[in-house]
Length: 429
Ligand SMILES: CC(=O)N[C@H]1[C@@H](OP(=O)(O)OP(=O)(O)OC[C@H]2O[C@@H](n3ccc(=O)[nH]c3=O)[C@H](O)[C@@H]2O)O[C@H](CO)[C@@H](O)[C@@H]1O
Ligand SMILES: C=C(OP(=O)(O)O)C(=O)O
Image (cartoon, rainbow, N blue to C red; front, side, top):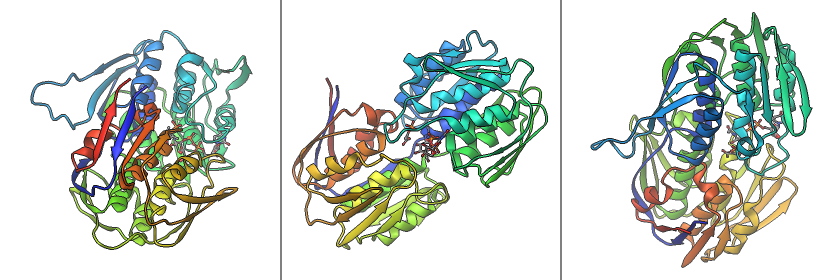
């Protein structure tokens, strides 16, 4: 298993190109199942989760072509992916493939809508809570599907097709909103989704489906209205920049000090996180080129943050913010409201010398003067990168184990950080 070695203490200076968003690319790839024509996605990041979803779609008989890198191609440009779901040969998504990644469960919606049936294993993904799929299944039932759970699989049937309906989610769910949008796009008649997730990745999916001939309105608000169409056609769509990768590197710069341009980043996708970072003492300038993040001289100020659905502070940046506050001048509090078990990084940050007290969903962080390098273990995707942020500011060497978690969601992390002056290397094996 690969490890990452970091010798902390260097400020970050330079440019980091921001990749396409994992959490947009995955549902967009799945949306390729909605049409017999070609869906072309630009700016797809090179990530383990993307490769895993390629395998899952391949198992359904979908042809996927990824542009090979040609001489002269910009190594930092995202991939162009052509998804051709003309023939779906198999409507089963097996445990061996789906258990590795949460988003793979979402294939249930297009398979059911287009083929009238789907058999999909209950999903895996980051171990950050129980993560049930009841909202997904209730939404599909509302659209007329018959659902059974047997042997760890969800069996969904709608032999006469899905029919538009009103779906009211009891709690905001990104994934359930994705599945409801995809299923309703090919249902007969109108669907109204209430208490829908407003995340930018939802807007990206809905915009892409509209480019495919779908009729979706209200994406980005809590009420989404969809008029189903009998067929969707091919389209070309560019994946939006990754707001979580953006926020992560912004926090890394706030932690180490220095000045970095996050090129291609969009400030409007993470305003709440940027406000928090400004409160912590980072200077952030938004321009057409991206976001410039700077912290020179001034220390890190403590913060008080609660995670919330978009547009609130994202749970996917909670661990990284916690790493930053370990060196704040004072006491910070971070409350996690989305996932009940998303504090696995606390004990690992403690190995670097952080002082964090956990009480239920509230973490109280007493800033310390110095962190010190140590061996630590990555436990999930965002927890892993919080350890990278801690290690970048710690004195001496840290070794991060189990970095396969990082590879699910961060493209060329070592390369991007070392180009800005970090002492970081991957040790294979
Ligand atoms: C691939 C992807 O895009 N993953 C993101 C997605 O995950 P994901 O879509 O799994 O997260 P949800 O928004 O669905 O989860 C929000 C909350 O709702 C609960 N819930 C969800 C569905 C359901 O059927 N029943 C239920 O109780 C969950 O356990 C959680 O407590 O949104 C999360 C919240 O922003 C992010 O942290 C993940 O990075
Ligand atoms: C939790 C995440 O991913 P997943 O939903 O795939 O587990 C994430 O992207 O932070």
